[in-house]
Image (cartoon, rainbow, N blue to C red; front, side, top):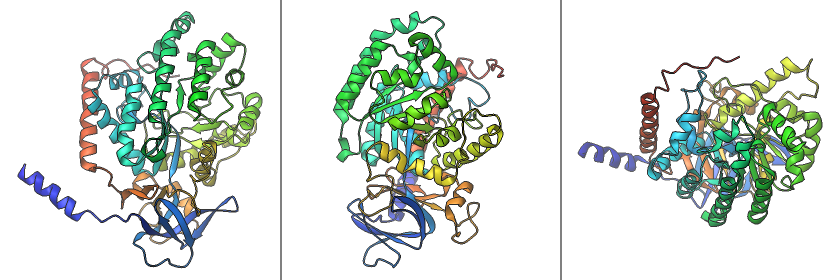
Length: 486
């Protein structure tokens, strides 16, 4: 105990004094918005005062504490259009061989509140560590949504949380049903969940100085009925912040919706007026881009493309189709990886590969994505959908939600600031992120989490993950035959 106390005291004594109030970010290069276009400018100083960007100059701004980002690319911090914050780490590295993530995710709900908070904290720390400060959060249950808020508030995270309806304790029987009777028998419980989601939203709306703005969440179009969709629309109207859902995750979802209701998922959602608000839809692998793409574009629906949603080496997704259709396209986290920089890179690389393979056979246009497409989709695109022009930008008057990435060091750079630093992001991952802040509050400094004890967050979260893995081991989950794919 004595040794541990001395170590803790030494760490506290050695901790850097973080600037607050008014300070300057000295940028090697910064991605700025000028005349509504994104442009990289080298050697700028950004003055932050009381959480807002007050000035941007090429000449040094003196008289203020300095955050040294002179070897970094400085960007608006990232906005994920699709997260399940409590659920990333329990599945990582154990389902990629082909096992279902169903059992690990259902065990998360059996944890105590304290254990869920430890798990949420570990995953949220990873998101921050990789520069993602704003989360369109679909917690898998209401308890997990409450856990998200408990952790996000003291850390100063910007969140748009809610819980998935139907939640993960009842989802799989409805989702993988063989008889639609199961769907209709689930209506009353789904209606209760919608009421609970609305109550959660009203309770937490505007919390933490406006950083917490809950949204309504639906699992997907094929796990709802007309009755529950009408209730969802009424709840969305009352809450007023938008809708978040898995959207045409597969051709199977689209087929079920057409069989039941005679409409595509997009037409069906629109028939309830559910697209007349901010909408973040994840995955969209089952979209008919020729038929539904124009409506998605016209309605401003955001496609949350999650390149690591299927885990490492997951399937290709229709990012090039969405870009070509002019649909607002964001980069989302989903579950298993919380490394936003890695997901930026994967969106571009997977998208280019998909375009090369499909350009001769695709029935719809494809646009090979660029890193600027991905950066715009990580920042301004979701901010505009949320009707927040003060987010997702480095410009005077915007919120100081900022991330800096070392693009000059080993592996990511060449020992000096590169002439075109956005392309160096294609050689980066989250470990190259150095400083992260939301409304000017520094959350990661020089690569270390500073809103909580990083070592304790990792140890506490890791202990919970080990508990889940032990339960899976006891149930024979690891030794069961893995279903063959394809």
